[in-house]
Length: 321
Ligand SMILES: [Zn+2]
Image 1 (cartoon, rainbow, N blue to C red):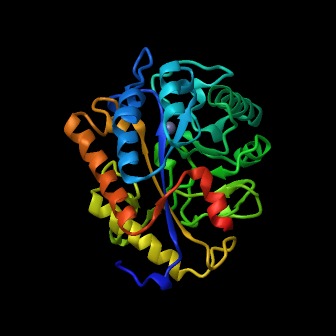
Image 2 (image 1 turned 30 degrees about the horizontal axis):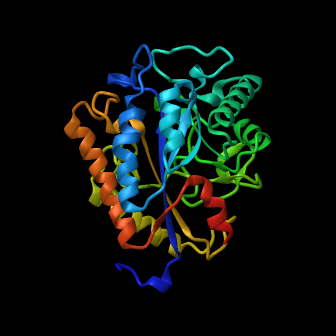
């Protein structure tokens, strides 16, 4: 053990995978839709890795994937947790095959956002046989109406908050989580990035600042550290996980969680990142295997340190215990 066990809360890890149709360079959507990110990525690469390390993955599934019977079969058979993920372009009303899924759901008028989330949720319940309780917005685009709609639809966990990030440069002026807590909390009804009294749990993605972020001028143009294997080595992911556990131990309370609340680490990436040619991040099989290898190192660390890899939908129970 690298830390004195009694001094820190128990820690858990969730590995959340935004599960979408195949993309390519510049995130351009493959046409017609392809799903090798599911039939190869989930079935042949992720599920065997999770099985060999005793981990439970969490697939946050986009609407177009649920329209594909072969993908549904793979995801239904996986010994995994499942939740929903909205890319508004692929869900009615006005569903279509976009060039790029670049919509932020917070930009839709409330009745349209509500209709899309209602349809996505009904589709999930139809194909997987139970209602989803966990959700992430495409492009992290959660907005002021989103939590009320998710609550009305029976969700318990929202996971779109990206601490220290401002998405203005990505085309979403005002979508920023600069001061958001890094551990789970109850959010404000109209702002998922702030602590409030909405009964949903906000489970933010584990993101911490790096020393480079405090450099003058360029500091705020450098991405903080994400618990995401896309660009990080296994060693970097492990170091970040340790830093977040130490942070959670040193913080007596994040306003809505008790001082003894366990630490929850939330890793994220996309299913398409671990299959060559299906995202901008892995053009070759070696690049896809490198991303998968970083994830494997994080899972090996979790196993060594007795950090259980749980589903996102298990988080409320863990926090209540
Ligand atoms: Zn997505």
